[in-house]
Image 1 (cartoon, rainbow, N blue to C red):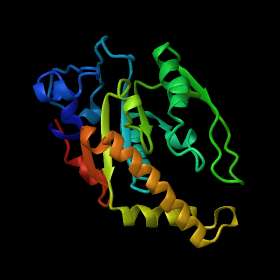
Image 2: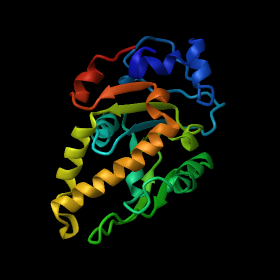
Image 3: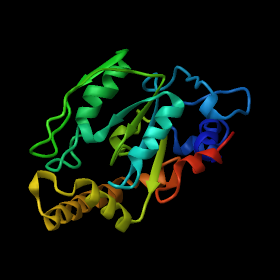
Length: 228
């Protein structure tokens, strides 16, 4: 594939890509342009008439940073899987995303509304209210490329970051939450990664992804090099 954006347009012409992405919507374009400036045109044969980019990877890999960058450049709204998951439910929250995000979009909803999950005792997030459905949507979070979502996903990105880097970032982010000790937070992250590895071994999102990016390098620089 020709990278992050080239891959979109190769779906119709590359037989290998066709075989791999057979459940995904095909795209058409007439000119070789930078897709960051190109308005995506979907054919009507997609499962949902919506272009969805999934950004997957380990916790602490840099998914949110990349999603925010793409959101800014593509004027795309972000759905965070962390709004559905939690320490007590690391993997089995996925039906909620289908029920509250994908199916409403499929049924023509232009605004999304859903409660957000609670991660910490002092964490009481406000629900998402009237989130607009933009021409491109981004699903960001651990297991966003899981098998159950693939019929809804148009393009997948896996952020590949060494485990020790992810653990360090995660620990720094959650340090001091709920008054827990450093050892308690580190143990929570170690247990979390065991669950993530179960998902990765089962669903192999890195292999399924259209693009794998390096979570230790500048995403801005990686995107700059990607043109049609």
